[in-house]
Image (tube, rainbow, N blue to C red; front, side, top):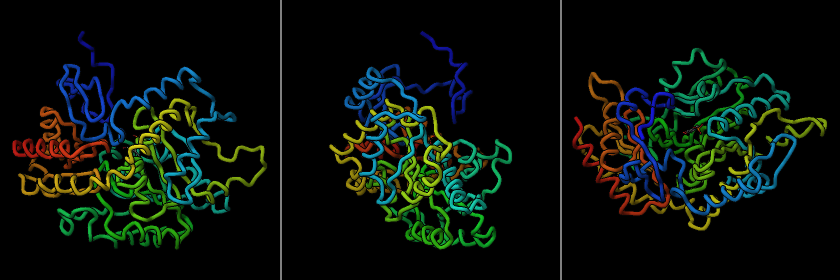
Length: 436
Ligand SMILES: Cc1ncc(COP(=O)(O)O)c(C=O)c1O
């Protein structure tokens, strides 16, 4: 049966190009996808940085089915259901110490908006309502809602949408090919770029700044690791000026770095963490904001019958998402998946860096089960063409990778084995050698 492709306006996709030659996925299990024709594809991207325990895990599938039959939906405003409380409490086992209050959302974008609204309201309830300025970073990605778009730092994602929010500023990005190309793990150079925040503080006055949001490791822009010392320096400057520090861990949360969160991996604790994706292994949309107790408690002051934070979603803490998340956490625990990235780090590092010297490659980056290959842009062509052609070549060769500008990003499910990592490297090598 031929499907009419016209009606579906696809997200973040070159619609006309795609519909001329569709790349369809129809089935998934563990480390693999299958196309409708039955071609097997190795998943080098954990779906979209979310299927950390691999696809179609029976435990999660059964938990969702059971919950759908038991109670499909419960209103989250002025009502509760036990699984949401159980999940929030269970999540504290994984969050950095002190981040022990949990607000549920349905996506990374919603987590970002939620954390930023909490930051603004937090200052307000403490009598500092003038702290309204929000700071992001160039090349950051914080989802696609208004604040996330404004605070994000990827030009093409911003320019279509007018002047966006006011009262926003950006730190410089930390990518420095000249000094850090081919670094294994965290780059040596660039901690001083955190001092950009002092520059913005001097410009705007600290009394006007509510929060800084950064990805501890920038993922969507093509995997930029924080230079050694950078995150701690940001933390120190925020502390000095009473600015909240938010880590956007939508990608890095739930084991991607080798710890439950990048905050633990890098030893720097923010005031809030935004999460999504791996929280349910990508099975059911869900996100969360983890906040320090002092932030939560600042709201618990007025009349007890008053709603303290007028914010939330119809599907905050959806029963099926909670069931999926609890089953996901069981798998993460039983298979030690949240630390597996650190065990696989050396294997992934040697696989990624084996690509050095291939045509057009200008940088290779890695951490845990994350890798990136950066290509020189092709003269006269649209940016990112080479990386996109590598993505297409890999797809033809049975491997799903992600093109991000001039980069290919690799972020497989955390259950990947050595020979599948070898398959990723050898497929990439073959494809890269073929592109002009
Ligand atoms: C760091 C970061 N923040 C936010 C988002 C947005 O998440 P979602 O697409 O679930 O809204 C993403 C998505 O990739 C992300 O990587």
